[in-house]
Amino acid sequence: MTRKLMMAALSGALAASSYPLFLVDGPNGETDWFSLPWLIFVAYVPLHVAAFSEPSGRRRFALGVVTGAVHLACMQNWIADTLVLMSHFPQWLAVIAMLVYTTWIGIGLGLVMWASGQARDGLRAARGSTRARVFATLLFIPSAIVVFERYFPALFPFHAAGAFFEHPLMMQTAGWFGISGLSIFVHAVNTGLAHTWLVKRDTAIFQWRIPAALLGVWALLIGLSTWRYYSNTSGTETLSVLLIQPNVTVEQKNAKNPAVREGVWTRTIRQTRATVKEVAASGPVDFVVWPEGGFPFTYESPEDAVPGGVKTRPARYSEALRRFTSELDFDFLTGSLATLIQGEERRTTNSALFFPKGGADVSGSSVPNGLRYNKQMLLFFGESVPFAETFPKLREAIPGMSHYVPGEAHATWTSRRVPFAFTLCYEAIFGDFTASAVAATGARFILNITNDVWFGVTTAPAQHLMVQVPRTVELGLALVRSTNSGITAFVDRDGTIAQRTQLSETTHLHRHVDVSPRSPTLYSLAPEAFLWLCFGIGLICVTFPARRAPAQTDGQRNDAPVA
Image 1 (cartoon, rainbow, N blue to C red):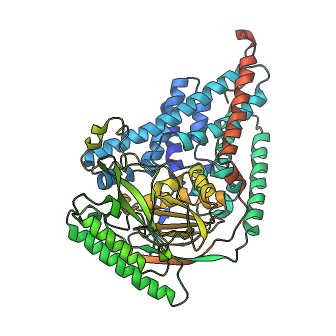
Image 2: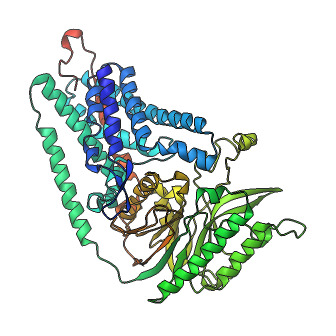
Image 3: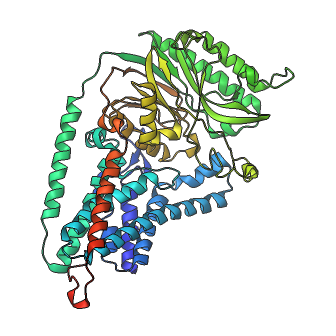
């Protein structure tokens, strides 16, 4: 068992190495990251070899736990630092929380390995089940793992095929099947190679059909991806978008002295005006975007004013923001905390504020106070405390931890009459959520704002970009991503990262974004349908043959290898 546990740990380390694992210096001195994305095709082979040859369900579960925990501990060790910086955990508690979380993810993968082993055991005892067992190996187990990747409760979910976020050619089939569909193939390669290895080991017979089938599917995917990638053409309608990266530090974010926030406000205003002047020299700017938390105070609309006419500092600066936007010759958006009145209680939301040029929305109605979107999907322990709505005392359970009120609807905004889908930070991780935002607006590009300064100088910002890039291919829309401290980026509709910034630099990006109308992608019409179709077919194949199997005596049992 020790040898198998080591194989499981090896799978965890190989999987972690497939994604941005640690920072390195690029060829021109820029910050880059180390990753070996092609490892993802073999990373889980040691785990499956160990699990497929293990007769005990409990031990299969343990093998999955080890792989999942090692993977997360290597890849997302920045969680401990983030809990300290963002949620104000003591260092010792943050480390414990990280280990508990990585173990939790390991338990999820362990359950998948246990269930898949039970399915294979049932098929092994069924008469004439060889094809069904292969089907389970190549469809049910891979799709079950992808369902786990997407739906198991996690702070930062990601898919196996996300490893190819810097290789747009590899992601093109996501327009039809989603990044989850491509991930099914990635895991099928792993399970298929493990199965083939075990059969060769136990029978000395090389079963070439599975590798040949996988190679054929690979060739088909590459062919379709190449055709789709090179058939993408740029449209004629563009929007001039300017992204401001102010690089506000953690110390400035956490500062109690109001003068620090006032300094951030003044510096960001100055940076914006200077940058707009520079960019406008070569053509007009249509849309300027500040990142999540770009407005350094809690925004208050006039109707949210404190009774008695007392103007708080946030109220004064909210007025200053409205005056600033009223002078602009372009649309403007910023992230901000905002006040929400619930009965007699003043609550807080993590919001985005959109100020259309001229103070009027697309219908011509006056919106001098701007339009507001409240983030719907809040990050546990960073933006919300689990069960705190049911048990309000939990809001103060950990001093300094935020608990915001979630929003209830997508923003339906346009810039220069071009509708766009808006997501705030973490929300863009989820393909189905972003697809619903696109459907709500008839969007022609995706806008996301985030603040990754809480991650520190780690690979977390690269991993956060990694899980957002696939949305462009899935939905056939360009992604405009504005961040506080990096990585701000423009991603074309084919998944190409056209421009990006470095970490921890005060800078900006400008681009004419392709917003030409396009036909909806297959994935956008039915998000995650292919994943559930594969899982459903696989489940039927592994369930009904096993249920119909007649009872066998010991002398009648199938003596096929354990693979």
